[in-house]
Length: 255
Image 1 (cartoon, rainbow, N blue to C red):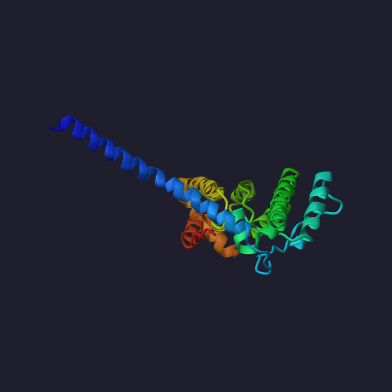
Image 2 (cartoon, one colour):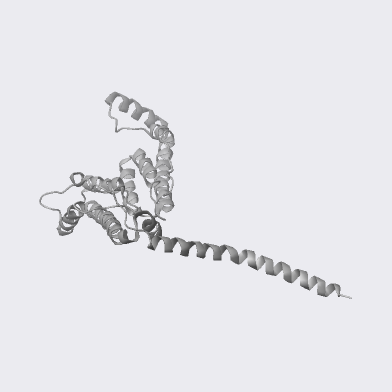
């Protein structure tokens, strides 16, 4: 007669065996699938690159004071102009395997070069913007950093530096615009960049609200002065919040 204890041990061992097989099956299947895709990618023939989204650098939008502010600015402007003559593509978030499957394995080196040009461009734009800001050329810094946003930079410091300048000028709607633009970032910096921008916006708008609540009479007086002057830059805290509430935040899909 089979012992009940022996039967229990066999049943438990069976459950453990099945559980281990189920647990290990996922990683094994994933590795097998990756190897199959990589093998297929390496055997993919060269394909045309016509559908690549090449970036045209808006060089004319980047300020270039003459004479240059300093040697660093002159060197960075020269670097950006040189890069503008090369082919630049933002391939952030796309794996080498996917690139080879789409465009063929022989195209991987040239695609990597295009992507490296993008990385170098974004860094040069950021460095130039910071150089202008540190030298007190704030308008030039804003124009330069906005070029970084236009080309789709994923460098968080490009967005936050620009947002801090906007915050100092009370241009809170522009910070919301940056949040919307940061939603298009395809790298891992996306969520952290959006969070940093939102913190900058919240910090400065909350202080404006507090200042407004402290002295309602000043707010009413400022309102009448703003209305009579017709100055679009003289926006009251309440007006700012109304505008921000109507600026949608659109989250783009990942590629």
